[in-house]
Amino acid sequence: MVTSQLYNTTELTEVIGSGGIDNILKDLYIDKSQLEYQRKRYINALNRFTQLYGEGDVLIFSAPGRSEIGGNHTDHQNGKVLAASINLDIIAVVRPVNSNESVSEEGSLSGHSGVNAGIIRIVSDDYPMIQVSLSDTDINKEEYSTTKALVKGVTAGFKKNGFKTGAFDAFITSDVPMGEGLSSSAAFETLIGTIQSHIYNAGKVSAEDIAVIGQMAENEYFGKPCGLMDQMACSVGNMVYIDFNNKEKPIVNKLAADIKEFGYSLCITDTKGSHKDLTDDYAAIRQEMNAVAGYFGQEVLRGITLKDILDNFKELQEKFGDRSILRAVHFIEENDRVENEVKALTSGNIDEFLRLVSKSGDSSYKYLQNIYSTKDTANQGISLGLMMSEIFLGDNGSYSSGVCGNGVYSNGVCRVHGGGFAGTILAIVKDNVVDEYRRNMDKIFGDGASMILQIRHCGGVRII
Image 1 (spheres, rainbow, N blue to C red):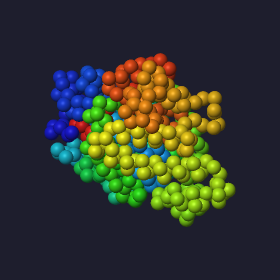
Image 2 (cartoon, rainbow, N blue to C red):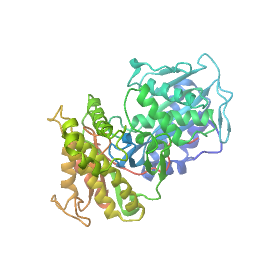
Image 3 (cartoon, one colour):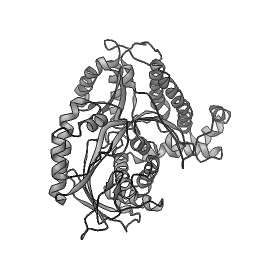
Image 4 (cartoon, rainbow, N blue to C red):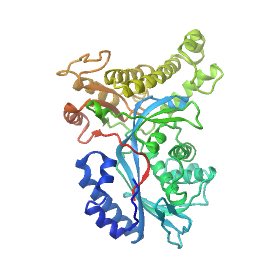
């Protein structure tokens, strides 16, 4: 993915405009119809960088968003997930600052020195510039939920893990929508980690290490409790199976499979709900699962069986209530389901894979209960999205058992996507009806609400 030559901003603008990196763009974005848009996007980013920081040699980096395919709320219980990086990404035009140690795989790129040495400066799209001192790695609760906190957290994580860090100037632009369950924050963390890895560590910091550092940044510096799935999927790339039984060294396997091979596409629909004020809802899932785990002397549910739950049902019910049991059972069954999804997909049994994805969505709805917030029952966008998807994916608007039966509709399946309570749903839709499905969902939720996505085959990368 790395070109063999370094360019200054003017030369690079000409190279991109003449199609000089089209092969790279095709690899990243899959859809050939995106080429003209991506050329313009990259050229605009270079022009914006030049306006901010002046001409000179630069590097370009990319980090993708992600889609959760299976394993809804399993990662924080040391469970298993099936996820995929997608062809929506964040890109950064970057120049090292005061760095004689800045190196890349293909040679060195000396940074410029000046008054901003030791300072990371970033402008993201139309937002104001943020500045982060390399010496300032303290957690500041007043910076929770800010971009600055994520940059500080990733920088601190690199230092804590013995990696080199350095300053840089960057212009960043994102096509990963915020608040739509595609992990814009994890993509950003991956991007910053990839920049530090390639400029100051010769690209030798592993994708897995970058993901772990990103999670730490989000948990401790950004103030948001999260598992490791988002960061790992964004950083590693492709469709990946991840087993978090060992949190410090999760098993990560890239899968040699893509639903495109079977004539299906991913569709993500934004049901227009807001993630604002949902922190308590997300936290309650983890707390209730952990409470049940604590009954068995464990911190998390991994390793606890359905038999354990049933054998202690009454006491669990009395101590923790019904919902805690439901959520614990969701985890146990969802964890097994991920393993079976991987087996079905890699063996080419698309019918069984779709059935399992549908069962996953059913479990999230009934047992995990992350489809809407009980604090706002009047607004149930995800519920509406799932209902309309089931109508549109059936035959002539009616339920069809299709080829799989048991919850699979004739033209695909649907489930909640990501953390839930508001935001997005996932549908896996037959290619011959995917455009019609998208149009129908846009009629309900507004133009552009539904996106057809492809699985990207790499995670965080240096492009140039």
